[in-house]
Image 1 (cartoon, rainbow, N blue to C red):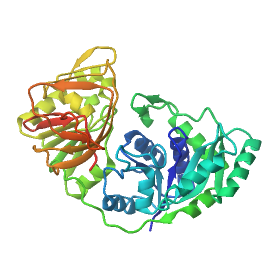
Image 2: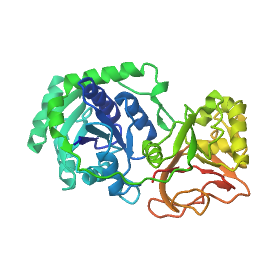
Image 3: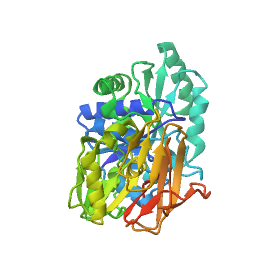
Image 4: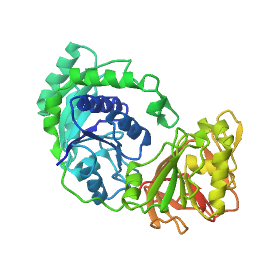
Length: 424
């Protein structure tokens, strides 16, 4: 039976991602089969953990997924040790107050190890930690990792203060400016785009092995209760062609694995390499990503675009999310204001030269050809904007708090898409 724990923090920016990837790499080097996971809808952290662990990372989203699905995904994860990276602060969630890392830890019965950024504090760390420890009785904070500790004297002050909390300090990571990952407008960049990514991982793993008591950390892990896998969203078709490259990188592992488990045949193709979807595909999925960074290459990808048009002509279902939705339109205007011709299957023009952030969970409802339940949960995160003309929307939408939003997306026969990323 697999065991696991959750890595959390009081707030974003505490160093969770670098510490978690270093921890996964260090444990893997010791021979552990680590199953990585990320709380919430974040694709990029999950991609980083996938690369480091050598096996797909799960997104465990306690706002979008029910308890049975969360338990089923965790219990059947590929590995002996589930290491879950939290999101934001331990108790930060959606507008309705649910969906936090603490909610996930309580649902799975897993202990929480807190990463505390101690850079600008000393004895005040103790009441901070004590507050998190006692905030919710169903969330068990069982260990502390101090991060960005400046000196041995600083570490001694922190450890002495924390002794009053009875929560063990598992290690103290020194401040190292070299241990950073670059960012862009949607967060961290994908691991394949980071120069020297392997060196960053190696340095993080070495620091973790040197400064954290891994035996004490592993002793805190708790067994995961056995749970059957929950039937996920039905496949989009029997033979699904999925775009996958640097422009279409935002794929949820639980959806892909779920479709395979339900008997769907999956093939992958690269629009950036001007590959067409499989000619026998009865469904095509264009996931999100960064098409705005590759506008000229996508505009020149004639084989890819003609393959989409041929699929539409034969009646295949074509579904695009966020970046995939943008590519289904007539044109994409990049950050420099240059327009690039897209597939032209929807009367849609999208642009990112006037960036405006849209972010949040979404309740979604549809009544179209999309072969999924009519009530769905997903999220939006984009800086581009777009408007289609003369077509019905794909989704009616509200935010996590139930506030009505403008209808989302477009539908033209069996071609459809929106800015929403559907989770469950």
